[in-house]
Image (cartoon, rainbow, N blue to C red):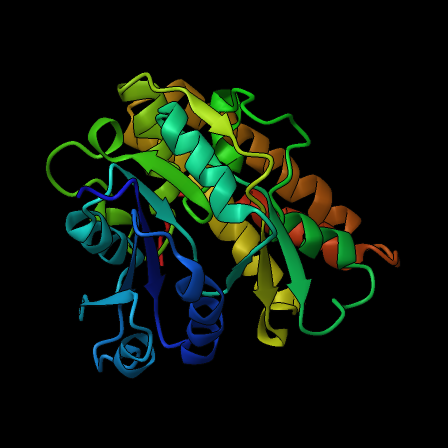
Length: 288
């Protein structure tokens, strides 16, 4: 029997997070849902964790890269729909039931809310910035069209019709193996394939954020990378007028917020992070 849904979990050197997620997911899976874990560590460090769960299937993609891991999961999935959940996410009540309803309704691609759970309180003045960074909550009703908000979506906690979204070949571009593969992929779905994107209000997850990610340095680096992706995606699609718009907006953002961050304000850390986001839009071609 072809499964209705293949749940795919890409993982990289987070055995504790993975074990906690599998302990929630694996025991009560219905028969028409398969569970695949893609271990992206060269040393195959997640093998024992996965093999301890009878319902979970283990895949090893030894060459690190998030695009490679997702491609391996898609290639192995047998379900009519592929549901991605990250190893640091935990499903909320009714999570799988909500995704089953959408899969049975035949949606092409759908995205659920993500709510952060911080291991420690964020630094003073940066609470709102970190909450916004790790959240996905559009405040919309179930089934709402979110195609126009694709820049704020992602492949974590997202469902895709395998036939319509993936087709032949590797769907995730290896140029974005260090991150941003989902932004490029969603651009492809919306602009190249003309598929509609759907909001799944009832399929929320809670993302566990470790203390190592709750620093001003991490916030600035993430904002810089996110700014780069705004321009990179448009450049890859050949939309140079849009690239020019984002570069101009980034220059204004970097200058304005950079100057404001020099003032003795309580929010100077958040302002500095916004300036780095502007620099990313401006220096989109300097990838690391």
